[in-house]
Amino acid sequence: NPSSSFPLGLCEGDCDNDGDCADGLVCFERSGMDVVPGCAGLGVYGKDYCYDPNLSSPTSSSTSPPTSTPINLISSSPTYQPSKSPTKAPSSDLPLVIMGDNGGDNFPLGRCEGDCDSHDQCQSGLLCYQRGGTESVPGCDGTGVSGKDYCAEKNNNLFISGNNDNPSSSFPLGLCEGDCDNDGDCADGLVCFERSGMDVVPGCAGLGVYGKDYCYDPNLSSPTSSSTSPPTSTPINLISSSPTYQPSKSPTKAPSSDLPLVIMGDNGGDNFPLGRCEGDCDSHDQCQSGLLCYQRGGTESVPGCDGTGVSGKDYCAEKNNNLFISGNNDNPSSSFP
Image (tube, rainbow, N blue to C red; front, side, top):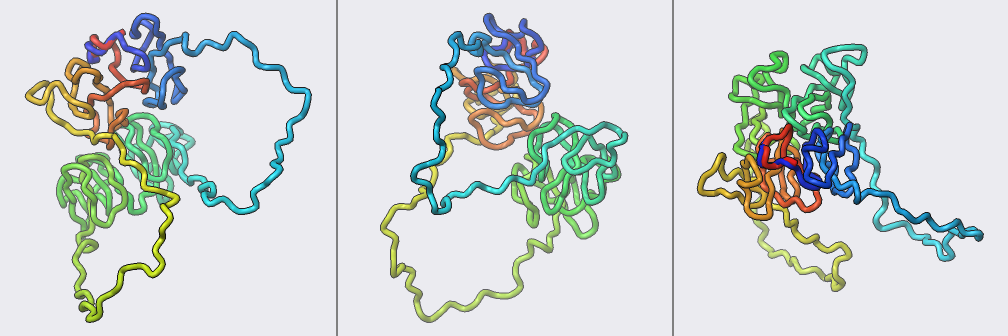
């Protein structure tokens, strides 16, 4: 689904068997985030992709015999000065892991552990982060299992605790928690900040989930009550007495060529066929020439595009050799094999 995406091409998924792939390709079945031979990226957790087995054949020639003379790996001119770009400290983020479901010996769950259904299934100081797909979990690493919920530290991060009073134990929502529909969903003193996209929520960290609304404290975003200092009577010289003539050792990086994900229409219209990073497409033939429809179940990243877009919506993109979801279970049939 969609049928127009099958048979699947090189590095396309999600396949269930070799019959879902085009001639000469084989379905590479994965148990997690295994690397697919000949394809770039990690793709979606647990999804299977078509690949060319001839690209991953072992070399026919043996490696060179070992040398008889040991190699001195100690530099004759060692560097005594410390590096100007020291190695960054390792991340404190933990990987997302599934420890159980609906109770068991591993409950209450620890940080970055799932699958939780409510806050009371998490250890003290943690909350259950509700997901519809593979949304990132604050303080945790990886995408985890799509649709599974994990325990995490909220701090002041934007945090999805529930939706439409489900689970009821999460309501009313606390500071920086969502998804709220009105002020009544929020705790006393808080207001529901309704967003049309990825608007910044006052007093909260992160961008959260596209289109989700969060509770915030309106007093934190009130204007200052004191006026600014009066202007000085003497002008300030902003020209440096010792200007730098050498170019910067760290020049500004070139801007990204990635385009933002945007919804241009649904099921046809004046904007079809869709361009790069435009949605919502249902099959490859709804995209402009050279583009394919990237099928998503949540907010999976789309190759060559920026942002998370609308959860569950599909977008047109350039495949190149990126791992690419074109369909599932022969839908759309035009994508298989």
